Length: 379
Image (cartoon, rainbow, N blue to C red; front, side):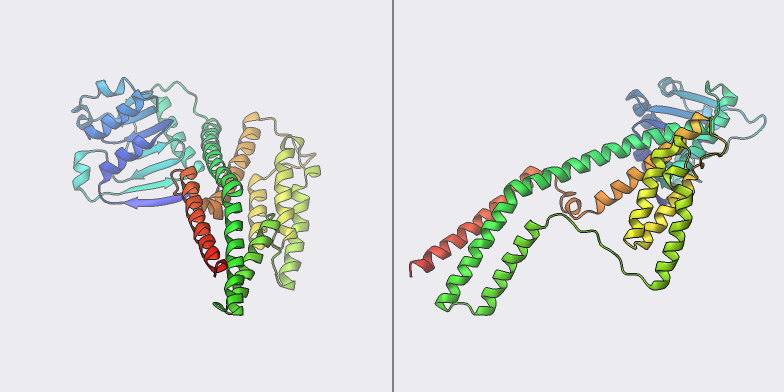
């Protein structure tokens, strides 16, 4: 989740955010007269983005000819002031990003002291805003029954698919890089280190380098060989105090009773199994931060035990399942983004070209080493 506040160039900011939408836009506004923003919404609607707009029925808004724009929208309605005035100023993009603040989408708003607050990644916040939008929309003819859980499902479904796409793209990049490294780069690095080691020995025998320099190169070669032999990573076991161990053990026993798969309602068995494994793994490694995160997820999931009144509401079951899937995907994605491999390649536009350049550099270094070896051997 990320929160940012803006005070300048607000109309440009709104336009850019609108043009970033991929699926849906929900807007509730008091005044909207900025024609460039209207055009951005119209363009997105024509390209298949679902645009939903509620606007105050006011003479200021009526001054602009909007019929041309709104015919492409999924839903549009003016909201009268008979009972309550529509004074909202918010926009929800793709059930993922909330844009709100004092700024009305008008030319005058650009010259006032105004602000826009943007929060992205908080699905529950997005759902609350869309629910508020629907609550007002049904009063002016929106053909959908207001139901918080249904909106939440739609939001979760969309965000899960978005995360899955990003995860697949990153995994593909990493796998490509690792494959090319293993097939092309690793053998060349090994060959270069072998040449350097042989060259160091030659120089030592001739008296060009001392024994310390030769040993350093030999050590470098041995480290690389060990790295190649042990590519599987060993899980780190954290060192914690005796008091922390006692607390950890006590908490583990407590939460085993809450989340063990044998104790949880069958409808939530898969979720319980994954949460239990996550908690147990962090407990076994003495990973206090990981354990705290795991039990936080357990408490948030609040899964029903066997023998408790059964949850027959399919929407609630599906919402809990999707919430867990979203959290799990987000955690996996964060780990991928933090990995050394991804940090290396994230700004690489073409991995194959990147590998080719590395290959070319290594081949040049190998060639130089071979030339030097040949010269020394011929002395």
